[in-house]
Amino acid sequence: MDLSTQLLTKENFFQLFSLPPGWTVDRELLDSRYRKLQQTFHPDRFSTKGDVDKRLAMQTTSLINQAYDTLKSPLKRAQYLLELEHVDASQESHITSDSHFLMQQIEFREALGDIGDNADPFKTLDTMRTDAQRQYLQLQNDFQAQHLAADYTNALDTVAKMQFFAKLLDEIELREEDLEDL
Image (cartoon, rainbow, N blue to C red; front, side, top):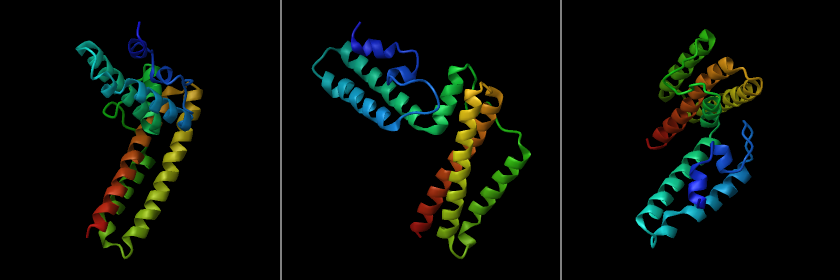
């Protein structure tokens, strides 16, 4: 079995990068192993090979990219860890029922929508970003504890909340870019 086929048969993304499965990921090690795998399997290295080898290199590179993207993102990593436990954490399947959290979502959305009316919108966006990042980090810590305790019901709820903050942080960045263009 060649190296490419061996990688394609790994049971999970952690094994692909020879990392221990779990919430904590050594980013430097992940980045280093990603670059090494990319160098080894980049499709350009197989341009003189046959069609099967080229296709296998493309599949392997695609898998490496997907695995890297998943493990480096806290939200995707949390979803993936739940998936490994046979818990469906896809965005469409679970929404939190935490009423306090849902009210907070509405308040964030309204504040973001009204940002143009603010005397100093950049300062307000910066404050919102800082608050959202703090809460997102706290949710990541909550997820880690829940995952370690095999409390997958609460971990799933935490992932739903993480999804909100990941989207909110993206929207804050987009709103800031829109204001800069004015």
